[in-house]
Length: 217
Image (cartoon, rainbow, N blue to C red; front, top):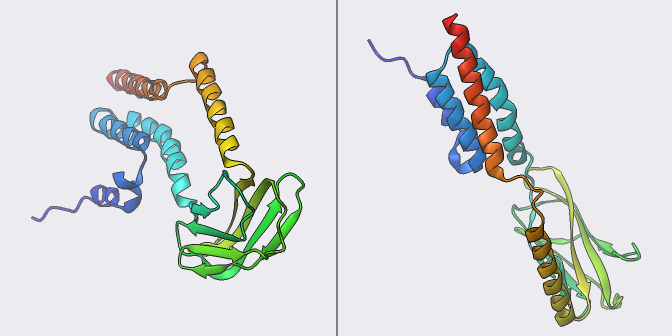
């Protein structure tokens, strides 16, 4: 007699459960659930599944909701340039569709929109030329975009840059980074990741123990 295929193993081969598509903590939850399923009673397995399901869904939600994102920008995001640029280029993670795409350059300080228009598309690259007569000088600026992602959904976002002295900006950034590192070293209020992992292990162990007691009675 032939062996009946194991549908559970087949389902586990789906892309959404492959380790290459998961974060490390999701793999950990999955392994703990597998252990509980093979070492505990049916009632305990149901309880463990009810706990693990929200964790798995929370981890997989960002994957399902991911649209095209900016990988690189010219000017670079949060960079400081000496002169106001007259060409802006955004490189996305996917190839946007040629419908309803807009780029807008605005002053972050005054909220004034300096220029807006339909960009050029070249595979992942979205670019726009800014007229030479637009030259607002030093300040902080926003490149806002609305594109049709490769999945067909409308996606909005922004990058920022500043016009000024790059050397002065680097000095200020380095000083701010040192202060931030010192503040982090002095503070100890954060909860380490291992605490949450240990808590999950203890919780599953408690559920397993309770289930064993119930089955023995």
